[in-house]
Length: 116
Image 1 (tube, rainbow, N blue to C red):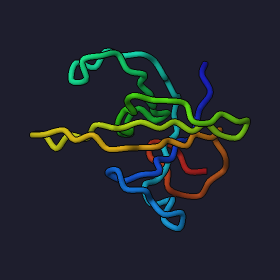
Image 2 (cartoon, helix red, strand yellow):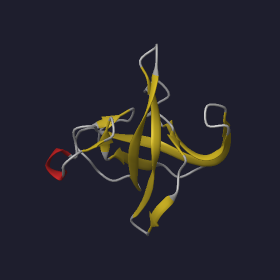
Image 3 (tube, rainbow, N blue to C red):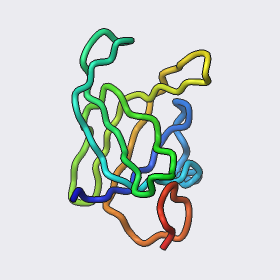
Image 4 (cartoon, rainbow, N blue to C red):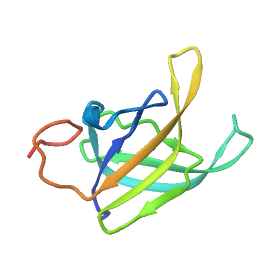
């Protein structure tokens, strides 16, 4: 069994979300996986982060590509990279930062998990 993590994205389509709007994108609860994956559009292997949602019916966030580890403490992990978002015709890469913490009691704003 892997530990659950709560993940908050700090950007929306590449734009930093100000602190006073931090809850706007909501948080995702699931299991973090980080591994090397070959990306044909980049013509190389890249470190990739992926969230597997606790609630299988919930849509996961886009994978985070080309991931360096920015910070790891007892309280949080910070990963940065880019996410590829497709509109069906074209795909665009946007800068993104994930902040992950161990699950805590919350009242709203979660995708794919039961609100406590």
